[in-house]
Length: 201
Image 1 (cartoon, rainbow, N blue to C red):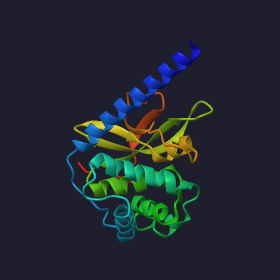
Image 2: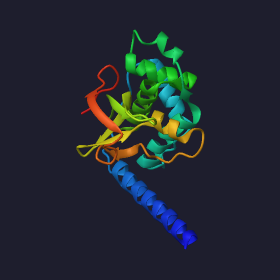
Image 3: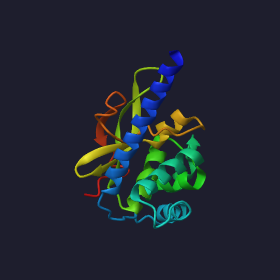
Image 4: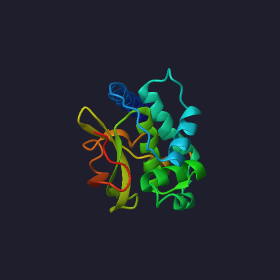
């Protein structure tokens, strides 16, 4: 009986994950695309270089966004993005994106700026949000994450926290294309982070 219940629970989890992935896929694939670069050459060069190595024209929008998310989690780790220092006077958000794409080290700000720069280049209306996120040991802490707005709905994307959750292992997409209702216990949005990336429209 115990084995049966464990199998049933596992099957239900797999089904829910499949349904959630299908929802994210339909949301992202339905988004209107307006490819937009930052206008800051070091950032745009690194974004295009990185995208060129992980996406192909025949990929769906969902697959491209997932590739950006996965790239940050697999290739980057949490730390001081020293490369951003050479850019911050010229372009704060794009400077942070360029720094982590070059050096593969950064904080939540840097992960989010890079994700925003890459997904905006794909054509999505992605921007950065400041607020509070739940801590593993309880309570909340200040944080920066991304939102992609599709048909007036904001969807949360948080590659830095997802990287913490994965811990070098499997990526479960707990913070990938979730409405605020779906992650209401994890996020308290306070403002769009205007120092980095603001909505395109």
